[in-house]
Length: 330
Image 1 (cartoon, rainbow, N blue to C red):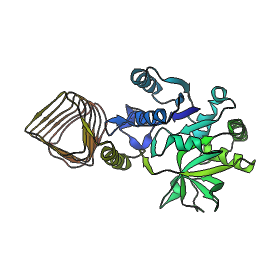
Image 2: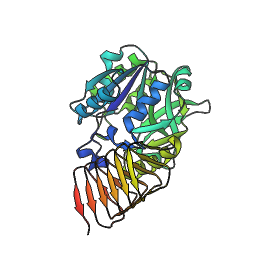
Image 3: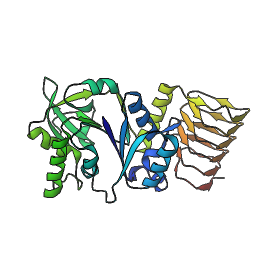
């Protein structure tokens, strides 16, 4: 079983952070989005990986090779980002006729990987949402079979959203549908959509069942990223590295504090993730993500996303600051 993880997107909704860091490497609960996905799939028995890279793809390659040197992984370059359907089509020679598991690199789902792989036939991960207009939508009959999928419909006929999890047994038919859409210029919202190709497969007799995931964490926006960080810290329990300096510090769990951090005369937590080597002095921080090697002095932060190598001084409340920034709010 090969797993395709598309991570070529520019992550425009997470700027300024994605000006200097690919979205898949944004920190989350003391890890990265990509590492959570890879670890989950490996624990479920997936052995081979194909990563479709593009925007700052060299950073993703360096990260994977450093943290997963033993991983059986092939990198495919998507130089011209034309949508998810185009990204998947680029892997056709590596996949061939084998079945394939596709997991989007900007969402995290709670599900049993082994259970998903044991289901007969092809399956699409779904989750009921209040407003499905910003997602691919699956129409499902009473037997649990998906009869149609539509990308971001203005008038949805279902509230079952596609969560970015696809196991396709008929890979040959998938690539035929992708090629037909690319040749005919069939696009949705100015991109070649994987959803359109899946609907093409259904029209040609492919049978997909809906696989409901327990939880679905959308990491594409600051607000949803911080919410996901809090939920995953509760789930993982948080970690505090042994190499740290705490002086007159109050730590309210769950938190994740990486090696080499200093917390002095400050309150940290709950739901805070701090990257390695950061320093926090005379500050109060909660419900936030702080990048590596950042310095916070005399600030009150909540619901904030702070990049790496950032210095902030002075009192504030909510910030969304990218890497390599210095701000004096005094």
